[in-house]
Length: 389
Ligand code: AMP
Image 1: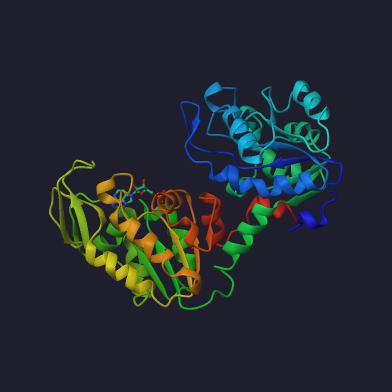
Image 2: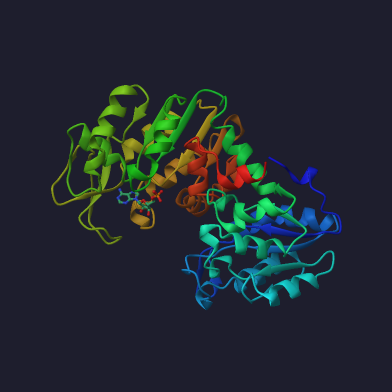
């Protein structure tokens, strides 16, 4: 991958694809982690005497301008974080107005253009759009790790038309996650949670041969428990994956650790009545909402002595405070390993969980990419990273 060390940016107008797909509610940004993560590259380019044109997508506006998905609030927040005014150009990214506005930028200035998904060609890597976007810069930097698994115009399309390099965030992510695949220090423990086996099966299959232990929690655990013949009541599960779960349990018998007890609720709600029951004996009308206290202790114990840890996916329905205990215990368990282990948190919900639990500063690396980090760990080459060769 080309890096900023090899790209000539002095006095140039540099088009930077960032990932500003942040949660916004009523115009207020709920979590600015991704904006913060873009600062090192922007500052580095400014220090090199460049002007910076930032572009990103936000949400899924379905190919047309929609004020609900405007990046304007991001420009305001970025100005505060950067400590300098960020210009916002609200015309379509491919328009003559945007081109004129960016051409007037002086070295040291920063601008953010409007949501690139307002362009119908963005998601199909349209050649005409690629050419129009390429006019916005003399060079292109990809720093949107969270979008690097998409072969879109603003990610890989434009890269073919301009001198290019991966930004500091992209470089840091690829290096940090790469260590989880190539020669990780042992013992190596992976914790996987979240709703569905199907979403993470490829990661599970790619990592199982390399890890020493894989702790499986969250909704996906019930498919494995059902596959073993357990009674899981109304817990979330995928019958189509029972055979696969059985195959993995047989092949990696000593490695897969499942929760032995579960906190069940009589409704999918924070007001539900709760009980702790064995994971394989959930009463008919109840559903597993979180790992139970014995499993919390067992999962934390299984982490002890680990030299490499990767965690993706909550242990329960952590959005409801009543069912966040397992996720918080795992967050604390990972963070408590301190500098003795290389600890990586990957993916959207585990990142919110570790942020909520206040432990984010105590782990080695928190990935900004959900889908992108999972695809990398599936062993795939990401189109964005490939385009930076
Ligand atoms: P993912 O995006 O695959 O990491 O899944 C995250 C989602 O899984 C969160 O919204 C959780 O509420 C959900 N989840 C975790 N555990 C359970 C469970 N036991 N039952 C239903 N949903 C769950």
